[in-house]
Length: 368
Image (cartoon, rainbow, N blue to C red; front, top):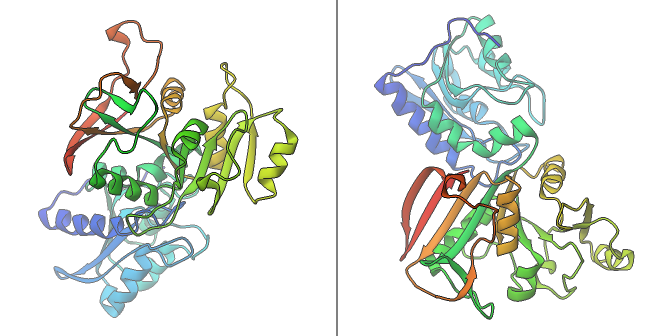
């Protein structure tokens, strides 16, 4: 949608206020899905008079919280927000109507909402009501913050993180399958934070059989994700720890043993029977489309090698996170199997690569 008079702003004070908006928005990380993370700041005469962030679905949006805090000082003030204010009735009333009612003079947002029900319409409505609108400030940082929401709105499918913990020579387990622990306690704590921020965590049945993980959030505060187990032949034991609590989904192929399916369902475990891929395994693309329809906006893949390889070959991974421990194993299980690459020119390129220390380990992140 074309919006007249909207342009990128770049004043130093404007950036300062938008940075505060982004800091506020991050406080909702892991709690707002399927909604975006949004922060808002109201500024009057160079002073912040109101601020807030969206905490969880069904609760007030960031703009409303900031405007309530500002009270009468909101009149003729400027609202800074990282995402276009909503203009549709959902679980809460439209923010645009509250902005108009409060008499703001200007709204500065980082970027338009990719939600097709909103995209540009919220800003156009504000403009039509005589409110000045500017957009584009710190847009790259704002879009990175809501990368999960943006992909989900654009495709209806979850954003996929693939997390690997490996030795310096690329191994995730010894030859006899021992993998506890490849990475440091600090990296494991970081992984639990990733789980707390994801809607779902996905592993293969091989990981269940070898490691019997809980797949819960324990080392940090946060909610447990939905647990998805890829199990094309229904080999997951009924006594597996991952089945003990929370929402569990076993993703299998069509035509499996109906008695076994009933055993899981009798324990309140959901079974998704999906088409198989060319190798007779669960079709990951179909699985992710199903997850998207159930408002699972992000999926964290944690293992093992066959799942890592399948996800990369299916080209469903958005972001790679590799924890590299400062140790050598030698012969053992490699982190990724055959990707069908026969020339160096055909390797999978990793973009926007970043490095950081996590305890003694090195965390490498990048986009595929």
